[in-house]
Image 1 (tube, one colour):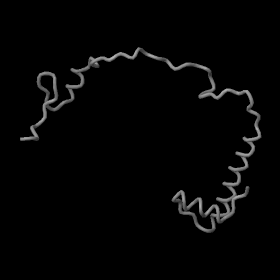
Image 2: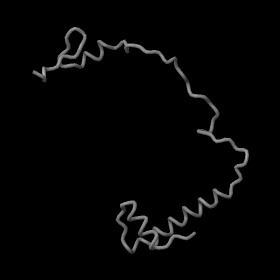
Image 3: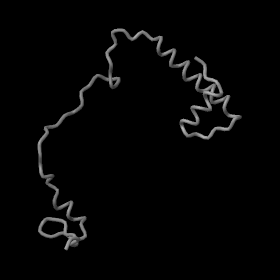
Image 4: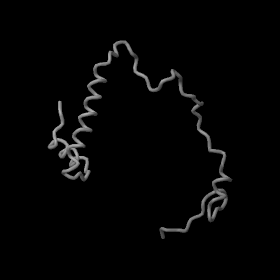
Length: 95
């Protein structure tokens, strides 16, 4: 499958990219190169190869899923412009 200049113009329009008519042949050639590379990848025999998320087979580190109060109330309230009795103090907005 080859990309023509009309196809390249349509792709540029769909991607919302402003491409001059003089640059369309180069864009079409680049898109053809990408498609050619994809065709090469389709020729690779992947029979029996397990899908993977990374090069090294390793599990992610896990931690116990425990609910806590964060234990940082003092640090958080230190940044508040007005804090009272362990809470943020805000102006009343409803009467």
